[in-house]
Image (cartoon, rainbow, N blue to C red; front, top):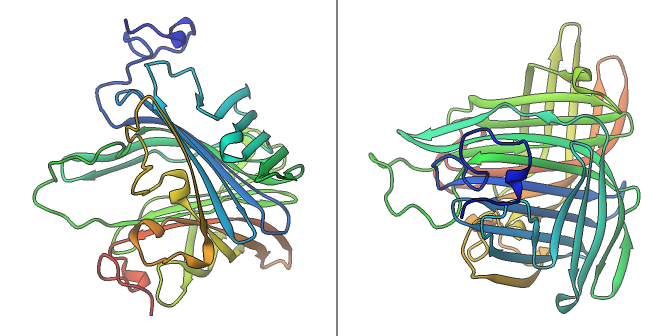
Length: 368
């Protein structure tokens, strides 16, 4: 039987039941959240991924506090029910589509609990469709919506409860094709060395939200890039896109992580700069990205849940699975009219392989 709960809703886009998503085994459907206060170290992040053709759903919830990143991983068999958005102790509930969602964590065994509600500050932005091929094979083909918002609720880890009332942050939804589950045993031919340059930097200011991302090729040419301002309460017509945009990064010596970064926006008659000053790095493997055990879509059986803690100061940032980070950052907006505003956001970074403007020539050479 392929019929599931989703088939009772008018959301079909092909003659197939909802349980089927085309024919690519790498199709996925994903939720992501992060949150932080106006100041202080406390940071949280969460994600949930559904992989219809692997019949797997997984989720993670992470908290950074007192220099320690705590990660709760969970995975189970999907049983083809894409509408059941709970993985062991972690659940996502859509309260109001495109505006309000709830994240719940209840794992007494691992001493982690949370009840968090996200509410959007403006209408989500739709990022340009991401399509990239390795030779004839589709490496990725997906769409992402991104939305900044405010949080209410609480987080409890090891008996200590922290309020997240007034926190800001970002949530996204992406769906399509990218590598998930077990690695493809047959590589593309002729062999090509991996190359991936990725910056994603949603930021919150009192007056609104700023979004910038870029995927560059090895020569430094962007193949997917966008910058958007979204004023508080803006609807889809009120999202302001800036076409002439770019980023300059100052690197930490011996790493592939940014010491600082400046995004420059140019429009007729004005130039604006948004400066990112990272305070510390959150490691995305806590959400499964590049994790040697808890990678996205990996089969852990009918249900598996595990807690993982590590001290940020002990992380070897040169290891490949530690390259992908979100740096919690002070973000400063300045324009040539003298206006200045200070906010907060993340500078997500994943840099693998050569990138001419950065001086990277090999797979894992580091900044001098």
